[in-house]
Length: 228
Image (cartoon, rainbow, N blue to C red; front, side):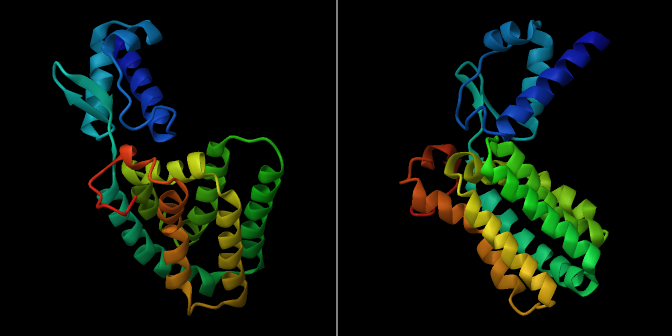
């Protein structure tokens, strides 16, 4: 019994990572038989993993019709962006008041790592991790990592961000906006925090809409014409 639980957990963890990283695309169909063969597992742990993924809205199940990776809920992702702008604006404002030379050096170091990454061969997930490292520093220093963790738990927002990074791949724009944030921290300038974060955090949506020619619309649900 324990072996089946361990197998189900491994299948769940693997598929969750592949869905969040867009290795498995929104709308892509999967079958129990294929998963059983892939993981050399019986149907019981496979079904358990699929049901758990369905419970967190990463898998859509239509009995006797299909089992597929869920579409990205555009409305849920957009609302998460709004919430993050509000929360991070306040947290960044407090961070600016606290920022000393050591914290500024931490931010500069992350940006240097981003610059180095962009000069060589890398996978998009590596850039995603550095992007998260940059922003999470604000939350960490203001003792708000629980808020950061909750923001990261939005599976639809996470996949929207990954779509921007994996498919659009405009890394330079993201890093330049990080430099703008760093300049604001150095100058202890708080007056444009909200506007800058609004532009930065909405940037993925803008890039997906303007540079995809609508080809990613099939990845989404709950959006209005013109939003994607």
